[in-house]
Image (cartoon, rainbow, N blue to C red; front, top):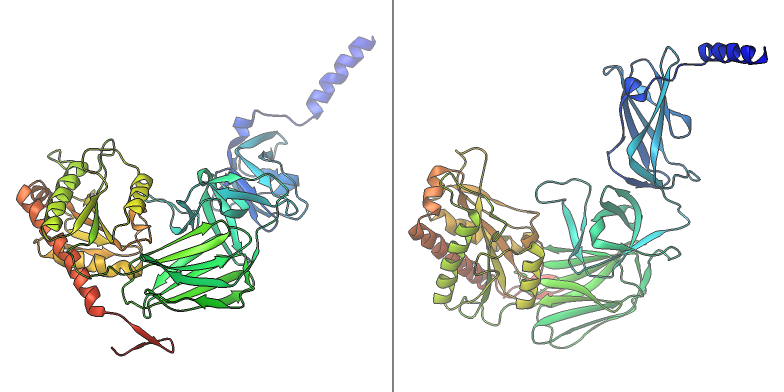
Length: 498
């Protein structure tokens, strides 16, 4: 009798409880927005989206309600601002849906979320001297928009993560992002890096003028090479002035006045005025905890003869590049043109450094390190363009830093004289070989291999030679233009009449 009553009671409970339908019948998909693993801290927004049965009640973390979009029935969204004390230890987000007929389902996101503890700062160190910071999360075939490059072992304060990008706190009002593979996480318990600046030493040798700023930690930095007047500005993040003097020694040739600004409590700016209208490059790195800025001097003789010119033939090896309708491959065309340019420059007395002389596979980082060792006076990188529209044709040049634009302009003007149409001179170009600051550099997209007329020209050895002649003339024009600009004398911070 007791067994019979228990069975009836179980049946009655079955009818009284809400039905638990399979999740896939009620929930189509769930995700965080963006759909990537994330680290968040108080004040950040955790955004989520669920697609499921219309008219339901949907909740997630700690019972937060999702709102059904009125113009997209069945799509639910919510934004939750992370609060101090919230905890989530690298786990997926769980969602609950209760339909109008009381059936219910749960689902979890594929991506994980970690809520950071402000009392336990997460630190990391850069792992190479080609590490770089991005402005934001955007990305295309050239990668994210780069803010700057950093030396190795620079200590960074990480305050977030989206996918494979860590968010870096540079200053109270400024952040950046760095790829996960470029840093190594440090163990817990470290202090957020800060430093007072010591007094500077400014001196020169046979190659460079140097600015050395003592710090107590390898802090992140950003530099800008500006014109009118030509100057280098370097922001050191997390640094506060304790600089009581700046010793400028005899023999400086590239640097004029040097001073600093403390525009914010945690941003120390070096302002280095240059004596020459055309900058020939600079390098920033650490010697221990001393930030050292090497400012390159102009060549002793401003002429093409004796100048060290680097030529980069784009692509190579397994990296074929663009391919034309006849089967012409970018890696072959760039090497053929680069060899012609080498001959033409050497005929004019230049010394030439080639990043590759055969069909070799070379990463961009390998080329940059090779060029740093070679220390050329300037770089010309050769490529072949391509477009999905076969009617698009013409030649174009590219530069990243405004101070290196004159080289790009000179090459562009000369390439016009080949008879190719002009496709523009492009600035702020986010390409790896335009990133180095050590020497003026420009990239030449010779012509469009995707255009039949341009392709016929590109595969013609005589036309290749003609392009090489024009590029060599562009380099020569840049050097002559630099000589014409001459040396700027500095008088009370302004160029003096020569």
